[in-house]
Length: 453
Ligand code: PLZ
Picture: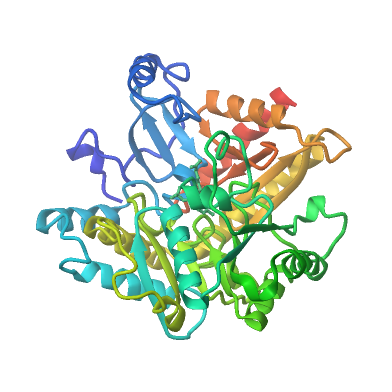
């Protein structure tokens, strides 16, 4: 690895020293000063998980303005899987930046957009003929998947699931399950959205995947009507909802129901995609081939890019000019995506995600034996969570999740919480995180449990 910090004192990337180092309290004085400016300038509705301001980042660390180096178990919410300022991302974006920054693909196209679509068509599940379209954010990709499914089926109803998260725009708020903080006071919401029960093994009283699918399909058949359904939209492993991994057989049964009933099966792989779960896409684990796949987050190493990819006949259903947006598939974001995908392939980050998952699961399972509050360890690949419960019950314990997260933050480990009940700690390290940092991060977490539970 080159030492990019030597030539440029503010450069991040893989050259940053891979260490946890605390030189001030968290947050330090410079972060506190910036926090005061933030409070005066930034709308209060935009929250902060950990109020340290970042100056550089790379590999598995975030370095703040006070010189603290934090271990990153969040990846900016599953985005920088290839690491922050990854070399191939930086070099391709720099080259693109010097050539041109924007034309609008709908006005005068450029090859980077086409190349990203080709990569998406190649990497997403299934070897049928595919097309893709690019957007700016995950929510925008989900909105467009719904538009495409409706145009193709000429039906209106959208089926989503308990605990689902699909975004914060008006349509995607309606698709998202959780009221606080995503929907509270922001209605009215879009119509023709129906919610079915999810397969949530910890809370399903022993239902297997087939039974959970029958329960969901019963709701769809009886309450929505099979021939009204434009699409069934699901995260193959739920992200914000609590890293809920459906029981085996649940996803294949839903996909089959869609095939039998002329509905479009849409996999929202925005959080699970691009090597995170140890495959390119989480659907592959059970051999499920979705009709449409939405992607974002990990696709472009931190630049804003999102995509919808799917069967050519479905993707081509909307009229010419029906899909688009000023910035969708911006040339810099496309260059970043090509650099990120190149990195995933050259470093075999699927294998790396599996290895990270094995290390995290082993350590967390061992901790679960010592800390009663850990009710379940679950996830796949480098997408692993612990659900925290009051000892001996299924009662969610959000307070202890918040306390453990706070204790980790104070010790220089970035962890995130999630879950409908706010009681899930989730771990999403960059897939390039070195082993020693992964181990150290888990030790910090262990001590945080000891102090908080
Ligand atoms: N679909 C499965 O995980 C984004 C949200 C963070 P955007 N998840 C992080 C927050 O609090 O806003 C997400 C997701 C899934 C869609 C989205 C939406 O992606 O890029 O945030 O719009």
